[in-house]
Length: 360
Image 1: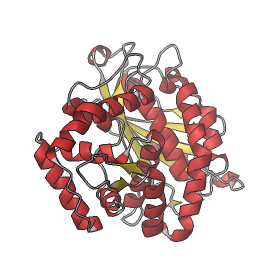
Image 2: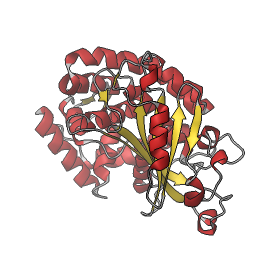
Image 3: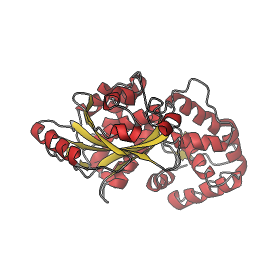
């Protein structure tokens, strides 16, 4: 456990991310899930690191190889492809089919030419992962997209969720660049590209224990360009929140940014006054753990000036694969780096759980 160290104050202990994983799974997923979840975390995190370092789709296949998730098989590839080809999509949309076994897009809809102005043959998994001659994910977003892919595949391995074909999906939005597009407006600027992935097991290959296909629906969105990559699972009312909470915890545990500093950053989003941060943190510790913490305004200021910005900069530098030192020069920049890493905002249930585990 980590500590607030101040000679004038009670030393408080904040939970580790491993403890958060265990407690969340016990409370929300069932006590039998916690051991499985920790086992999966331990076995998959090295693979996710390899995926980030190599950007190779084979690593994603390894993550799925021992999947214990529950998957509802769908129609055959041929029948779904017929459906895709005969379905008219929105003006800014196109579709692909990716094979996890073959590690490539086995279908790219011709409408990609109308939407982003490139040939279907140029839309490849290599261009998605950033090691083709023509790549399209913004280089600053690429390491985050890849990390989230590893987290998503890990979530898919969990036996506590059931993934239903043509209903449950994973979506992610990021910046894309197509300077080789034949559409002048797309040539000149970044665009928002959103991918929705519907995973399925081909009904002709029911011997598989993990999804061998995902049908991806892509859209160029017209909202404001953002440098924060936004991933999300979409399922029914019962599963959506737990899926996204688990994904958040897995990402946070992988990054391993100290929880006490993250709490301070979270509260800093709503105020620029150290006193307001200390009051809010003390109030929530009192509410959820029944402790009188007495964290002071001065203590908050010292943490931000001496530790928090440096720590978030180090984590951001590592996981964004930045070649330069990205130590934030202000709390605002530190918050933004935490958002880009997916550490902020903290889901409400996770925040409450963290505060409830604070101890003396």
